[in-house]
Amino acid sequence: MNKQWRDEKAPRGKLYVLDKDGKFRTVLTDVQLSNGMTWFRRPGSDAGYDTFYFIDSARQTVSRFDYDDKDGSIEVGSRKEVVKIPTAGDGGGVPDGMTIDADGLLWVTLGEGGAVAQYDAETGEEVQRFKLPVKRPTACTFGGEDLQELYITTREETGQEPSAAAGHLLVAKLDKSKGHAAAWRCKAI
Image (cartoon, rainbow, N blue to C red; front, top):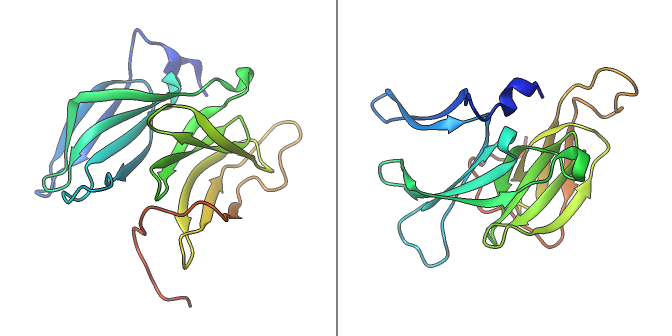
């Protein structure tokens, strides 16, 4: 990642919302490198999705916000850093894409760390990590008939010894974790 994105004195990223009327609205301006996003409905909530998670890759963080499903508003004042991910040099990686499972646990791809890790969004603790056959996974989402397959995208790798699976779509079949909800369903072709 380009070092200029780690310059805390000059945040360059922003988070925008596209409203129903087709207009963009700026929600966050103190962002270094906008990345993964996911939504969740807390157990017992009848309000639809009520929680929004957001990755700032350069800051190595996942933040949680209150979210209103009815109007798509993110309550900026509710922002709480829930996960701090170590850099690749310290055994972590660059947090990139993210999804959430039915138990409210976050799954984050770790670019330069060659893994996808599961985090407890309440404690910030890493629950488990799956090493991948690539250095740079980019995003993940649940799919499959029962939402127990984790689909992981990867990016091209250049330089010395690129991974053979770089640029491929990887699928991990999970026994104990299941996706929160399917964003889109279709019949198998």
